Length: 354
Ligand SMILES: O=C(O)C(=O)C[C@]1(C(=O)O)C=C[C@@H](O)C=C1
Image 1: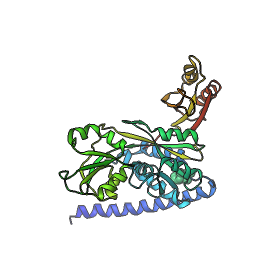
Image 2: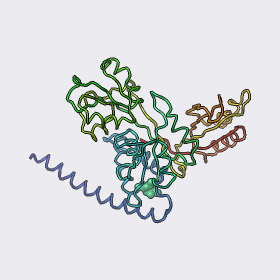
Image 3: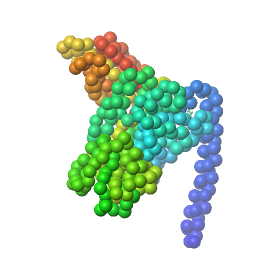
């Protein structure tokens, strides 16, 4: 081994020991904070502030995202010393919901798969999980209506958001596509790869199944088939990646929200989600949203859903910039409340840091 290589490795060994000693010191501080805080130990606003501060202070050469992922894991491990966070998600193992839960809560969280989205809400409400992660919209396929309806019907609050880039892969137990007769996937994933499939595999019959992890499981038992699913499912079921990143939109992204029995405190860069309905008279919708513009509050999403129980009646899902405790947001929400037939604040939470 050259002297230079040996010296560099010695240097890395010394640095690793320093990092380890500092990590232990950090973990002891987090433990002491746990004793002072009591009650809810997970603080999404504080985690977002830590991640943003470190990205801003990052001297390189590691990219900001890499630094944030490392510190996400450090905070996940520190939090688990106090209390391992239990997080319910739409299963089975290997779904994109699992990847979103991991991305947000890190490797030390205990993840609980559920059979359906409403079971995620039930697990959190019953106290079987501390938090839940549910998909609410996809950049190609639009809103996940069932999740929006459950947010309206449920007392739980949104305390975070996760944006996950969705990469779809063509997977099979076989080495090539030649012998494949069937293609399994979730309907959303089939839709996200529609053009690629028409160009490359138009002859294969497409079989929609309950989730893309389930599709991967079925393909693992049937070498005459293939599946469309993500990397986590490919690894879990030992499948070959026959074609990678086959989603039609190169920016294909799903937005998930984190639900719990409380929302988050202000972090300095927040969003607030609410559901409202306007009075049934001309101009009512404009009047309802006008206080937002007047108080300088940006609306980042407006989505309508049919209201349960009234034909051709709608509720509106609104996302705005800012925390409900910010002075301008609070003033705007108070006026909106006076003008609306119905308002429910779903929660204020930090804008996704990673
Ligand atoms: O600052 C706190 O309140 C902590 O508990 C420490 C800490 C961290 O490791 O930085 C851990 C968990 C919380 O979710 C936020 C931050």
